[in-house]
Every structure is written in structure tokens, then in C-alpha cells.
Image (cartoon, rainbow, N blue to C red; front, side, top):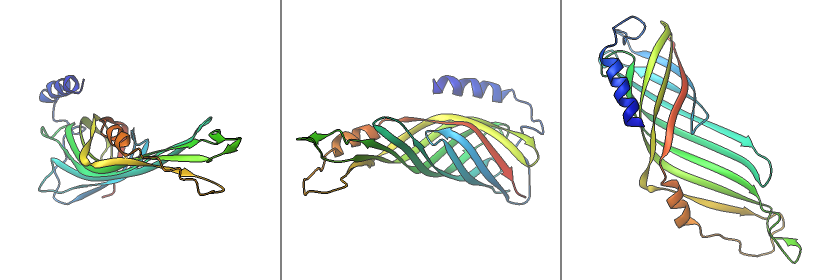
Length: 211
């Protein structure tokens, strides 16, 4: 799928005209931008971008965010936070770019386990699951200027967990601890789960240039 999208974007970009809307702007001073985005798996993120005049085809950036959503039933909540930094490379100096990032991601799930009982007594109330991963992301996308100071972009890619730098833990919480050891050895299973590649999608990204 990604290769198919990449082929289409390369074909379009090879014939794209260098219009003021799409062409990377030539400047003699460093440009700074503020980023806000709706993305997957990080629903909301903010960031900062810098473009150096001697490297106009490279847009260096850092993005991060935190999102927590209440749920119903035994799943009480879900959360995700992440931070990543990298660069977007505009090989044709128009709208098309390739992106590469390094970062860290944590996905959390809070569950109600109060129905886990022995002789009618609840062993614990909640269990919090944390899935952690240092990540490498690659993506292809496009960016267009809505005005000289505002740009909009989207991209599609994949996040890969860096080997040996991912895993997770389960934290079981008791309101009235009775000395029972409720430790769960889930390290092997969580290591396998966090190794699964995830899509990296920017549904929409706005960049406000402040100079």
C-alpha cells in the first residue's frame, strides 16, 4: 500500500509545476514554524519546525502530544503520549516530501478488575497496562501553502519499534492491600505486542510560520 502511494506521489511530483503555492520558498534567513496536527496513533500533537536558508529542502522538526480518553465497561480509559524529532526532505523542492523520525511512544490502558474475586472478596480494583517503545518512523506526504505564513500537509507511513528498546508493564492496584502478591509476569508478551509495526498517519497538519 505504501509503495503504491509512493509511486503515485513520485509520478505526480515529477510533473508538478513550480508554482508559488507548492515551491519551497528561497530565503536568506532561518524560518521558524509552530505545528499543530491530528495524527495516528497520537491523536493530537504540537511541535516546532525550523528551516535553515542553506538547506531549504530539509525541514527539521520536533512534535509531541498527550491524549487520554475515558471509556465505559471494564476498560476505564485509554491514553497515548509520544515525542519524536526528525526531518522532512523535499527532493523536488515542491509539495512532495519524505519524512524520517526517531522518538518514544507510550500507550496506556486502564481496566476495572474488581470482579476478580476469591470467596466474594475483590482481589484488586484496577490494572494499568503500559506499552512503551522507542520508535523509528518513515513517511511520504505533501505540503501546500494556504498563505505565505500558513501551510497544510498530510503524510502516510509506518512506525517501527527499535529492537531491544520496547516492552511494557502491568500495574495492579489494591485499595486495601492484604499482602497478596498480584505481580503478573507479562514481559515476554508485552515485548512481542510492542514490536508490532503501527501506521503513522498525519490526517492534517497546520504549520504557522512566525517570521
